[in-house]
Length: 113
Image (cartoon, rainbow, N blue to C red; front, top):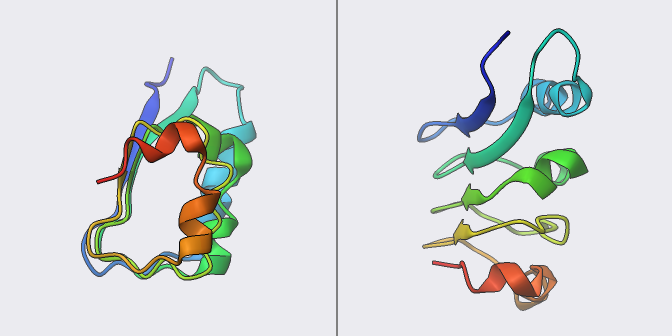
């Protein structure tokens, strides 16, 4: 049986692309061959990711994420509404609008750094 994948950490100055999002999509729906994909931590600190790429993260993955690190990320256009299970959200030095902040689920707002 393969180990459970819980954390994806992308280093500083990494450009996210559709290939990563396709992997997230396929693993979020794949439950065969003993692979358990319950992503709990996504570290995008200092990453370059567009709103389209961020918003394309599968809903199942968004719901399972407990820790989301967006330190120094331009979050313009990001939709946070499906991140319903957050316990830690790091928006330090990030760009975020009031409307985006208001879309963060109420239960997750207490976790914001």
